[in-house]
Image (cartoon, rainbow, N blue to C red; front, side):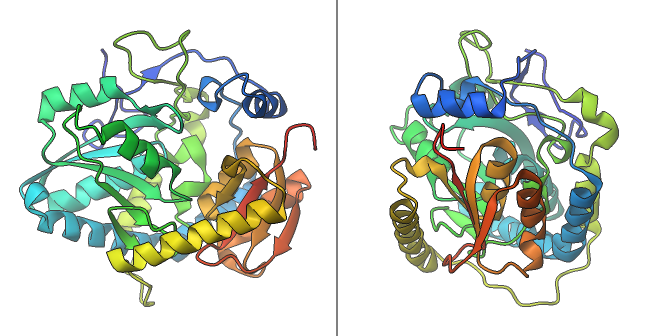
Length: 357
């Protein structure tokens, strides 16, 4: 297999994905197919569009506001990983494409600065289908399994944590489901820098801040035996690519002067209970029977508006700069926005039932 680096420098990451020509499915058609059970979401891609100038301005404002905080949070993760016996000398960073990819790039660099030998791969994990075992076998052959750390940007409500545990729990791969994230409002990571749901700027742009790589796709037509999960290489967006600029901006950012809430395992257990309480409450309030239609957290709420058919956007504070981009998207798409208490989260999107919108 030809190794693939997207638009990143080869030393920053190797995507264990198969670039492919993937047909696009309209958002409403995709929603109907997903909710009817006719197709799994991972079998389809919708068109990914470039942001308008206002949205891009809001992204840059978030990067200026939170770049220093993200730099500090990645440093905290690197310190904790370097302090673990399993990863003190070497670490194989396995980021979960694609939200985890920019974080994996930053984390690998931070570990190198601490004298830890580090290599970064980015692999596909799909809700309901699990992690790419072909990719894991490639990593195991090259690096072994003992020093692996799985990396993502944040937790929403724990679906990907559950997939990681289900995929690796039987021990057959040799990898432990140790998940490190920047922000863990759902309380289900193995390690995090903070429990707070804050705007990680890379979380709101998609492919143009993740190496020009689409969401991963898994279908029999595209992925044969021995293949990595598929993706589109978004070369048509090369002129708008922010991937390397994002990394450079975070690494150059001044440290945040504001105190921020940290993360503890005990605190995470409380966050987990609060998350489950909120999800149950929203499912009851909006008459939702499928919890996958509730998307909590700034980044997940944003992605749901960009890629799905939203019924409502909920925010804790409409005047909060952290959700300004989400209000802009809601205005563009005509979705209603409600201000209400959301516990650990700043925003939640409720996806519409197919046929209702």
